[in-house]
Length: 165
Length: 72
Image (cartoon, rainbow over all chains, first blue to last red; front, side, top):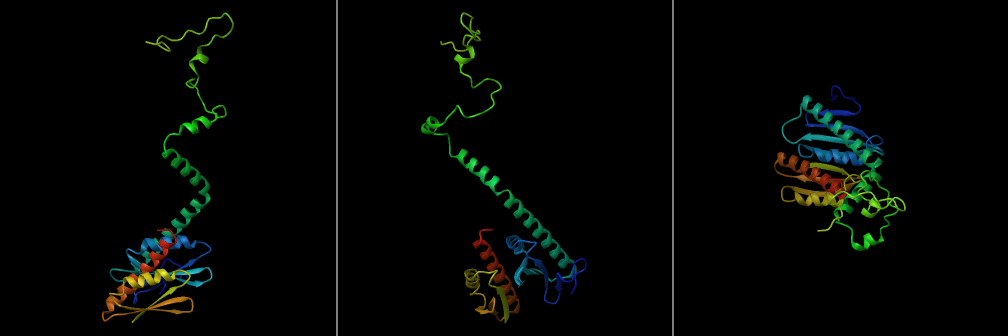
């Protein structure tokens, strides 16, 4: 039986059997997205997926509790279609950003492994590392307050800096 | 008797067999093949139980298949 608001060639409701079926185009919605969507419905529905052609699937939904009327059938089909679209979109985003996600994850895991060892520090080439130092914090005291030229007094160090008690 | 047809390309055999084992105590479940489908024949004295076992078995087979694909 045709369901109002949905294409008759894609959606069919059988109120006597208490089920509604939905045709899925496999070239539009990935199979993994279909699995994920179907899995999310098994708490409220009995879900059956069938393959009707090379790239076409059929999903049959039957509510676990209570019968099926037109309103429930429309809600079920609408929610399933919306979730299937969301799952497909999420998978596409993950697929397109996989290298970035992996790089960020590896850096996060690397940071969680703790501070570098003495060997790591000894092998690290600080001269090649570029980083911003607007406050001159990374500059050594000697380099910061060294004499500018022969005979010229060095820049006076602030009181308390470099003094020993 | 209720017949449940699960497409072999969508439901793995281990998942179907595992799901069948889960509900063996609740109804008689026979497993066979017909072309591209696994065919499960569920029998019980209670029609409501037959429907429930059939539906839950299908859901379980789906869930186990999805877990096997690493998606759940």
